[in-house]
Image (cartoon, rainbow over all chains, first blue to last red; front, side, top):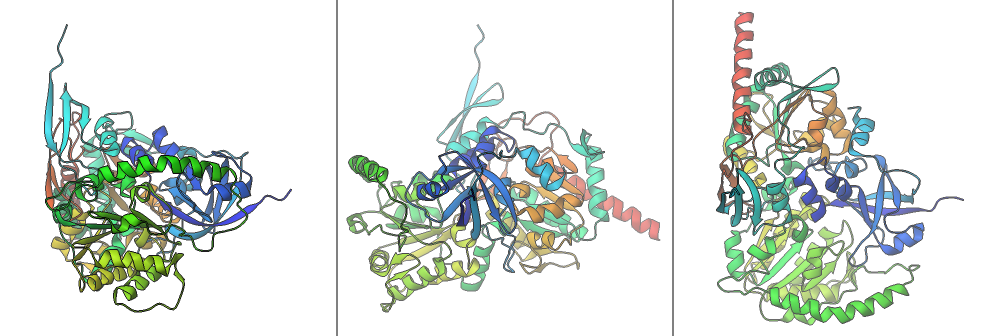
Length: 133
Length: 489
């Protein structure tokens, strides 16, 4: 069976959980939990055939990362995926600085597919795979 | 039974976000913070977790792939050697430390001919460029607290990133001329309980096959014409701040520029020959414009939703132009929601020392400024730098992967109280004291008001402050350079 892929607009940004996690420490479980998730619209999750907290693979021209899909708790956001700032979001966000120094952290295209069998990498695993350190 | 002696320190300034709340009360028992009053969740997290296993206890140097504890003297000498021998080093971060350390940073950058940049480059750098294009009509947060009757948050979610902003400076505070809207929000929540049950039933029968044509099907409510403060939130998704707003306007991603231009046209009483702009029906925009021009004192706060989306600094320029247009009809100001507690200080210190707020290149012996060329992300992507000093920030958590890849391939010095992601891939790691808790200093609030940071507890024994570490690295660099000069002669 061919896996359903969804074209979405990638947004990265702040959440209060990510803020609390970063102040407690980047190696804490709280920071890991809050930055390895992605808010999605409930309708988009239904299209992918996934439930809350199912792992998904988000792919952009810059890379690919496994995250947990979480239902956006307020209102509709069809065709969008919101990932809190962190090393996992950085693995896929755009390098394009449009000649002013600022990478395009919001509003770039991405593709999402269900990946329940793939694990979310820990921070150490992610750093090892990306930078070899 | 022993009685633990406790002391309450009042009026502590919180060193977390750009709000710099200065009403924090800390209870100190046996030299440690045990209780935080008045703070938000992030403030509590910082003050209650400052001593943990994630704190770096001694300087570390990477030897044979492993981080080995060393003395400050050895780490300072190693860092000075790296920086003195580098052709094009970058010195980045600066936003979570005090102005005193930032001042030494400028001196060090000039001494080694490096590139000095702060976190504004991935935050409100475009805002600075927008301000340089259009100027900025702004005020202090005190003016807004006492006078603002229309508050717009555009592309920002203070409930998550600046949790006490509404409570201290805008909609939920009692000012001299405007009252808090907190009770009105509570009543709205009570009234929405029945609606929530209805919505839950509706959601169960929700069909997802059809996409909504315009994202914003949220009509302007009657409360937009109410007496008192009015809160409008514009964002691509309904954030927590959107939830508490009198009117939440949901816009399509990357369409802020068009919407701001459309609002400008409406403010000037021009007609638009389209039905909707950026996912918002024009008739809704007209009601928003009515609210904006009929206020006594309005303010637009903006965040990453504008600076990181398509258009970037042009979004800011046009938002400022809108405020200029609104000032022909009423009184309006605009302000960026600065993130790190002293990123405004970093821009201010760098500007008074070098003439430029960020992305400053000293490689020719004098400061040059051209974001896009002299900004750290671009330098890393072009693989031009040959060493990095990162202080009071965590670019490995905030830069695109490609930029960090190059940073990790060149010698990397990190100064931070905690083991952050950049420290984990660093080559020389310095622990430092926590500014605003273990060291006194100065920081600038998001409205450019400087506030004192207190020393509340003693730092762990032997730890140096950011300022002391930088000063000692600078002294060592000068020694190495003078020895090199003598050798050459």
